[in-house]
Length: 230
Image (cartoon, one colour):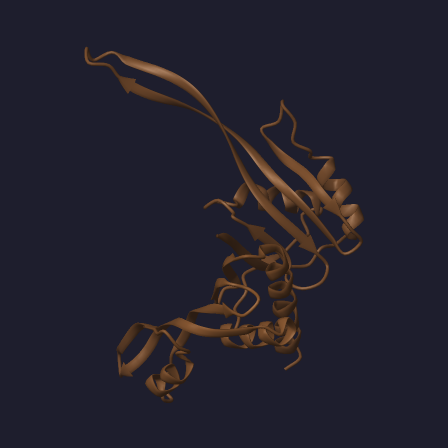
């Protein structure tokens, strides 16, 4: 399973220029952190941010003596920047991405604004089905902040062996709510599941991850264009 998260980002330079700026902060054996460029095209750059972390493990032996073991860890975050679509894509990112975002901002002359997304996950799923032309069903969804009565809200998870969207519509029935997550089960030529979140995140567990990611990215791009034109 791979985890993806998209953010809005406007880059002040072309992707070729951004690639050169990232290469000027390249990671090597003497670096504390830096970038490794994997692929450069006119419209996007695929790269990794690597951070070297040194720490010490302390172990106490049976006699009460402390033994110190220096250790080194390398934390990696794979990412993609582009001028189309959301602009920034993180892949299997660590909990903290502040170091990477700071270095990206430095490469962008500190004029980079990264913004979280808020998306309609059902609309995203519908566009995915449209661009991919694949069969799928929503076999689970999570509803948050559903108002049952005044000052009373609920978080609800609905699961089923068939599509649960109609059941969710009946349950919400005009009540204020926030659709937080949905899980898509793919049928036909692809097998697996995709979990979509309303902050622009996805967990992909399918046979063809790379092809699925391209389609998800394309569907999200179309959704953002449609949303911004309203």
